[in-house]
Length: 476
Ligand SMILES: Cc1cc2nc3c(=O)[nH]c(=O)nc-3n(C[C@H](O)[C@H](O)[C@H](O)COP(=O)(O)O)c2cc1C
Image (cartoon, helix red, strand yellow):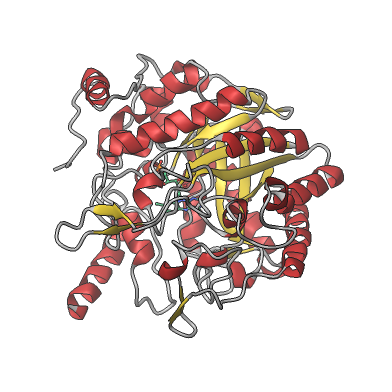
């Protein structure tokens, strides 16, 4: 039984949103999603995007595993025309988990195979792949690097929640920040990584600056001393230099970025109710990008709008807008009826979270209409997600609609929308958070469980979930 999602019809959903003071539009037809779009001289055949969705199913040395290949075959066959390849670390020490993909000499051929199989599957399902764009997300996980946290700055609210697993100690003011010279080296590495990824045939690279990984934390690093902290110019120095250098070397290639437009602050579960509550803090906030310094619940989009405008000027053609921090405030980025095991019960109606995604993405798209934006936050809308996306795209509130969790249960959602005008009911993601639960589960011999959709991709992930539950049972 869903806790919050009780809508039987589109009218119920619209009325439910109104009761919460929100306007959510639902289109009668999904036709607007099937209008092609020109992005930087390339045509993308429809407006449906598969968000980057890492499966944590690579090998210990960063190669895709069999489940990784399977995922991109399923995504390719599924009919969405923009496939945003998952988080792939540019440096070993920047990997978020032991099975995250890594961009390195020894992984290039495998990353090429992932792309080739994705395109082949698209064609084998009867699609033309001339209007399919496939990219790869390049990342450094910074504070969330699994071997050792690498901080861009000292965030007074995140530091107490950050543990250096190599010593078991919680990070404090004595913990060193990544040096300016390492950030200079990282600029070189991102440019080199883009060169490699374009060389493999990917249509775009995403320089990831979201979810409070390293580049996202830099955007918020108002209290970092030196050339990469403090002023807006300094905090955006790294992304500016990376983009400008890639643009100079590859004048015709598509550069993308996935960026946070609002960080918010950490939440924790209240002892008795398990309902999420913001951590105790004293405004003004020191480092929360896109967030009002005096009231963390409010977005302040002045800098995010400025950055979107600057990115477009520097040469970025595609921006995927997202929010929050999956570790410290998961309800912001992934509105869900059921929280992940290590999370908390929703502190707000998930539809308010969805509406926040839409409101912020629309504000950015309206402020900078010349750049193509991808919106996030659709999966919680379950069977109505396609029709809500059609309303947002059809009215120009956003150029493209991205789907995350929904693609694990229903990788062929685009084909279903195209052929049947709706999702297939039995594949609709119900936001149970099993996928996040698998990511957070401990005690896998390789250090990390692979993730997917246990209820709706049962044959593969059902047994994995059972194993996690059995271990949890043993432990308690
Ligand atoms: C299992 C899983 C893996 C994810 N992997 C990535 C990733 O590699 N990069 C990224 O930017 N976001 C990642 N995300 C976030 C999603 O792309 C997306 O922003 C989020 O799920 C909200 O969209 P939705 O409501 O459609 O699910 C991941 C989310 C989940 C649940």
